[in-house]
Amino acid sequence: MSKGGEKEVKVKFPDNLLGGAYSNNMFVTHTKEEFILDYLMVSPPTGGTVTSRVIISPGHMKRMIVALQDNVKKYEDKFGQIDAAEEPKLQGFNSPIKH
Image (cartoon, rainbow, N blue to C red; front, side, top):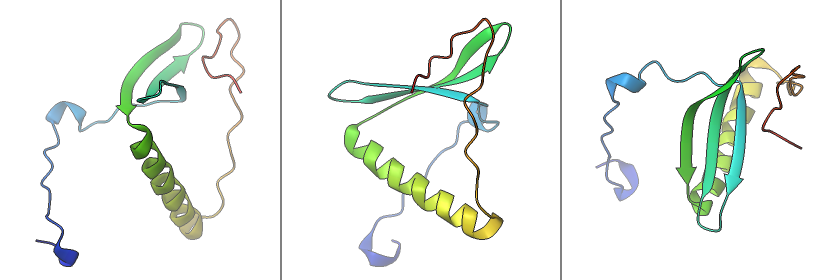
């Protein structure tokens, strides 16, 4: 048991996921019950390919946002401010992300 009485969970990392999946774009949709995050590799002029899809509950989405904000703050405290990247201007390809 870890401190605080919480049980330790062992996580198996499948070999086929060790290298990760590169993404330079993301498309988010949702229903009442879930958020669907499609991660894409967009490469003009050929278009884009979904490299991963993650489906999560709304409650977990809130926890994930907090965790991401916390980690961005830790990163910036250590390495300096991150400038937001501009949305890519892709000729001949409609990016699925609309603001």
